[in-house]
Image (cartoon, rainbow, N blue to C red; front, side):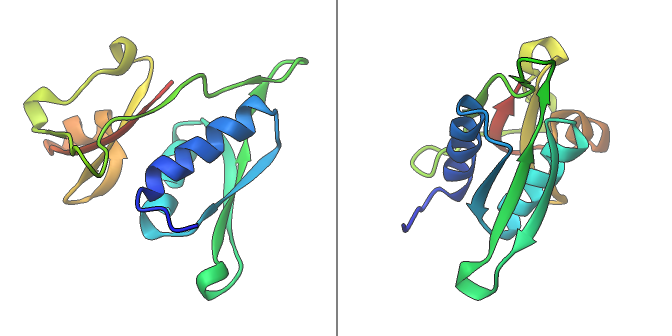
Amino acid sequence: MAANDTIGDMLTRIRNANLARHQTTAVPYTKVTRNVATVLKSEGYITDFEEDGEGVERRLVITLKYRGRNRQPIINTLKRVSKPGLRVYSNRKDLPRVLGGIGVAIISTSSGIMTDREARRTGLGGEVLCYVW
């Protein structure tokens, strides 16, 4: 499957795995998907991720996180903001606050992929990849 939007593809796979209450999901490996997974892990939305396979077969296996006995997914919503057809950029003054700070906006900056909070702290703007809450 040739997906031009690797991030959108990743978010959809996580969303679908969450709905089906899967423990893990695999997404094609790119530097961007690895960095987004790193942010999701540091923010506590996923348990862990690991790289698997070689070359073209390389993928990230993401371990999803649930709470409680009836396994409520920690991630309620994954929303793609900047799409390949319509990029959304934000300067440091206009960085979005997701649900008044409850959620996280993942921003691609010149210093790598980070949360809106980190970008605000380091005074950087960038491309608003997605919202997570």
